[in-house]
Length: 94
Image 1 (spheres, one colour):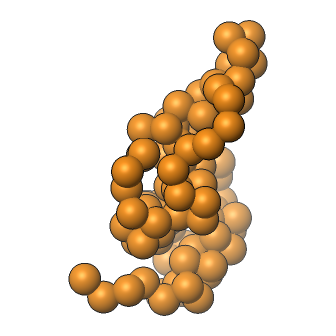
Image 2: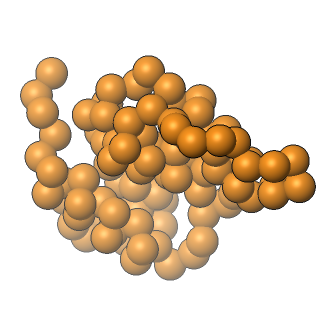
C-alpha cells in the first residue's frame, strides 16, 4: 500500500474546516478518532469521567480505532473529508 503523502493528510485537515455546514455528531466523532489515531497512534491516558459526556465520547471514538495503523487512519480521514466535501458540493481541492 503506497504511503499517503503527509501533505494530503494536512490538506484534508484544512479542507474539513471549509465545510459549509457542521457535520452531525457521529461524523465529528469519526473525524476526531481518525485524526487522533492518525497523528498519535493508539489511545493513551485515562478515560474521562462519567459526567464528561463529550470527553468520554471522544475517547471512545479514538479507542475504537486501537490497533489501526496511523497511515490507514490518515487515509480513512482523507477519504471521509473528501466524501463530506463531495456531499456539500465543495470538493474543489484534490
